[in-house]
Length: 143
Image 1 (cartoon, rainbow, N blue to C red):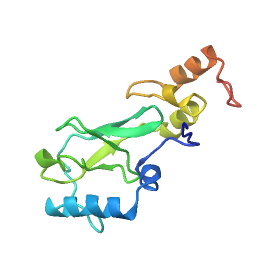
Image 2 (image 1 turned 90 degrees about the horizontal axis):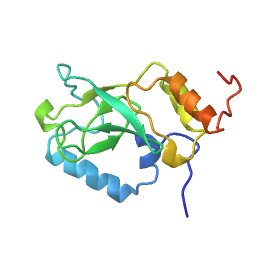
Image 3 (image 1 turned 30 degrees about the vertical axis):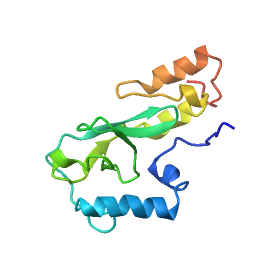
Image 4 (image 1 turned 45 degrees about the horizontal axis):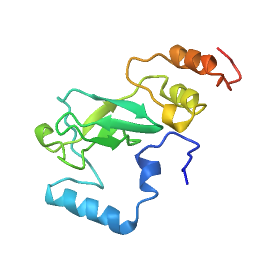
């Protein structure tokens, strides 16, 4: 059975489906690396900010070190669960999203999951145009 989502999947949505045991394991592994998961965090302020993207309805951020990817967190801070941002001193890296991030998500939600894709640099107007070309313009403004 195919799972459908009413929103773009972020870290918060994804982690709702993880068991307490799995999350405890992830936190324990991070603790061994000296990573703090609760409370104040250290941010690599001098690191180049990362950019979020959306792939098949999942808001994700690519790791610049190990080429893995993680779900975008509401905090807009990135911590790779594979390499723990080793080259950034194991500190969290800020993530940038465009000002029209919410509108981009709304337009993508009109599409089938496999076509809910967005990369940095794609304009909202282009996404809307693509939707209209495919008969998916369900928005009220029809811009």
